[in-house]
Length: 417
Ligand code: NDP
Image 1 (tube, rainbow, N blue to C red):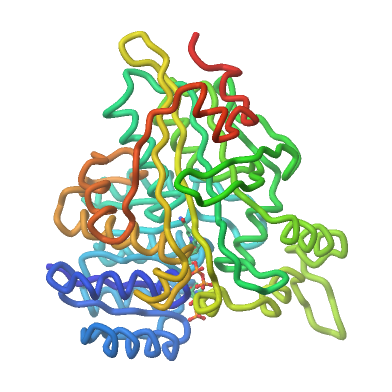
Image 2: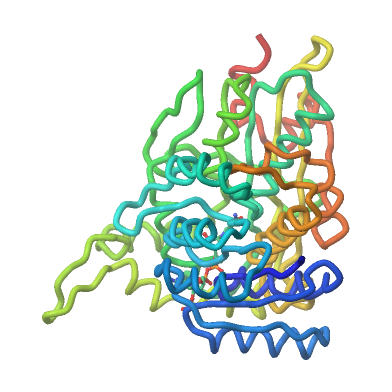
């Protein structure tokens, strides 16, 4: 049985639908469902035109468990690929349990009225999924997703013990707009304006948003970028599953222009998630802002440049200190020419398809709720290369660390003991 229902016809949903359709031997029946079926139909038409595969579409409001359960019971898919918004994670998990369907997503649950994303809500489903004999695979995008697997791959093949982790996400792309976000604006702005948390000495340490900056020179000529430390959800699962980690940090590149706009928007209250009353109507400023900003799924045709996302891990092998870097570089224009999408949606959608494929093939299938690093990384890494996201692993010495400007990241601070 290889029927899947993809929920969410946004930028990422477009890529997942294209990539699953390209693997029609594995995904024999694909349904794309969203709040607005018209968006699903546009994507289905584009897939039919570009690769000649027919996918079906459906309308569903995934906030409504009974409505979604009805669809799942009627269609009986093997798996739901959830690429709607993080707000829908729990309702979709509930519907999957009610209908006996496996579950996969790319972002952890976040309550609509609190900008706080944590795994605790989804980890609480562990017993329910276990008892139902179903798998919930959490965070099968790039970060989280590929970055979790890069970490587990390095831990498996290069180290006896991993001690520090730095996940570095550089987007060297330019879409030509003064300000736009590469994925859902509301989720993106909530994420980058949140307080920073990083893992240090067995606990999370909180610092103000964007208060730690470094300069990072990407490999293979991608360029040098300012990166800022911020909180990202994979730090929570990786610090839990790798208790030997003494420090784990997440870094993302931002241009001065992006940060200048964000600061002004924050200062005038446009990023607030608290509703305000305007002429008798309740308006949530961040939702209005999201409406005004360019739709991320329209950025593809105008974005040029590359992404470079990877993990730097330090640890011990045979008693010796070692530093390994695993990274993936994608080109925005190449992604667009393949699936009419920029690289951020592409690098999220391909790992979602790969996670789904490994579940369908029962390579990554066990009862319960799982993060990506809990399964064998090898088949995932092989599939990344096969399906459009080739990666490299290099060993760094202190000299090459200096050349990458990673020394700003203070990697030596707490290396080997
Ligand atoms: P978009 O806003 O482009 O798309 C989200 C889609 O979800 C929209 O088409 C929307 O519906 C649909 N949707 C929203 N609410 C509902 C609902 N109640 N019922 C049914 N459908 C709904 O977002 P992106 O494609 O940019 O992002 C999708 C997901 O991917 C997000 O959760 C995001 O956090 C995650 N992500 C993960 C990354 C990673 O590396 N792990 C990186 C980037 C994104 P409609 O348009 O039909 O109204």
